[in-house]
Image (tube, rainbow over all chains, first blue to last red):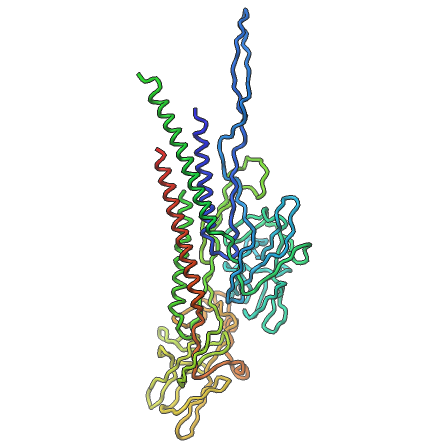
Length: 279
Length: 278
């Protein structure tokens, strides 16, 4: 009866999802290495509409010709299609802990197929096999002296090995070399490179993973990839609080506008049901 | 709709914990030998919604949308940085000048006692039987020597001196000198230590279950290794809390708290709109 009835409902749902994503961004405004999620809203696939009518030609037998005049395209709603992380570099925050490391993007090549800039990550061993990647360099040592992240996942070296240290009296050079207290190199911090970061999926605790446990190539020696590892620094989250708040308000008002249209439809329906043909 | 609210409330409780942690640091900003604790956040679970399995439009990311439900404190780490030294000119005040070195304190626990570690070096003498005194810390717990025993000596000492190797010499009016080696442990992995109370840390109670031994975590400095000790007498180590950093963190955390409460308000108003459709 009213095509737009469910269209506004889908609009409300999409705006609701947007507020959910924006709230998660704001909640993670203090999380080191967090990359803000951006959402794309897309309309439902176009629907072709035609006016169907039949013309009666007054002949002996009564000939009826059915015609369909195209009216135009209409789409009947919107949905939240994708969540894509914004990979811009977060600001660096000094820390007193020797096991805190920040990745600083230097120059990263732009992927020709997708038009996205590449991204670099720390390499972690995932308990379910394969590797996980993260930008959160808030590491610590476990009892055996392995370098681990906050959830106890092992940090991997550039050769894919766990990094075992005698104590946390280490220094990490800008090129990722981990030196012990005597200045002897123990390992090189593993850094991986994704040419198109959009193919990675975000998971809990700042992990990024490839589909089907895929593995990213190392960033060392990769053509055109320039980066630095900064010890005693953490990369702050790249959430812009004021922009998130503004977007949250926009989403809220869009939600409200949809609600108002829904009410208008409801009043039209009320009229149709109760006032047409009133006796 | 509730997801917005849940995300914000999940995070609010964690921000509250961070505020607690910051206020504890500020409260201990003049506790001798206190090491600042730093809380860092991490993302909570991500949930995937397969919203458009049938949609064949081109997209940049793998199918489905993924979004999280807030942030939580991933770990609270102790900052082992050296605190500044305060000269007190009191005979039994000691301060370490090297990071990760700790005194051994014999803390009574149940029937027996437990060795705990601290950098708080304000010691006292406590009289016991036969005119002897025992070296104790501010809580009255005995300070251990390098063999793990309590330190006794006769009362009425005239002077205390300390050698660079951490040997405490007690001098008497008749020229007698009694030497004691103060126990000093160097922590290799302070991350694995358990916070007991006050400025005390101890070996974790589940050390064996973790598959660790004491030697993995710390080394008791004995014999020639005692030359590595950096200990000073008549000084105390101040807490390493950086007040300006804590205050900045406090403001930032409070603002985050406000942002998240605002999200709850907005979610509530959206629920109101849904209620107000009809």
